[in-house]
Image (cartoon, rainbow, N blue to C red; front, top):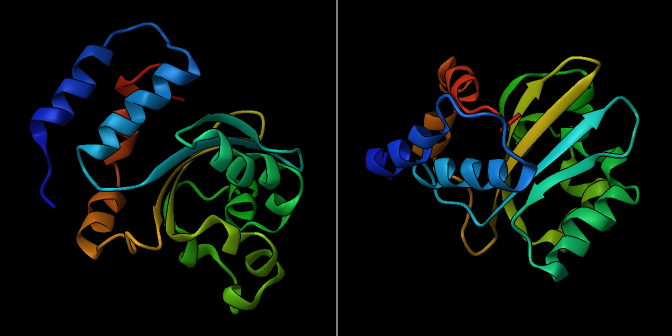
Length: 174
């Protein structure tokens, strides 16, 4: 998949120089930006702070999906989530779940008791460390029927320094 530069500039252009936006608008901008680069089924933005329950800032889930991906997750499975542990370190950058997952992830309690209910093939997270021990994770997800993110798409997202410039010109996104 090539970069849709027209869609990219249409998304970023109006954000340059703007005052901060709300979570919903910022999440929509993030999704538009990402859709100009890669294909994904869902997006969610969580804020993590130390051992506290993650805060759901934005998601694209239906109400039924929200129960599994957010409500159930916040009820406890987040404590076993590799993204949660990476957010607490913090590990800024772009990561695939499988890069952060421990050995035998697919036989882990987290995978068996929670992750299988999501029906995901893959999840990629943009980890942004903020002040006061807060890490924001912007996640892109692909369902099993969509398959994992192709190497070329992940490589595009993984390129260093690209995202620090994007977050800087998009006030309100973080």
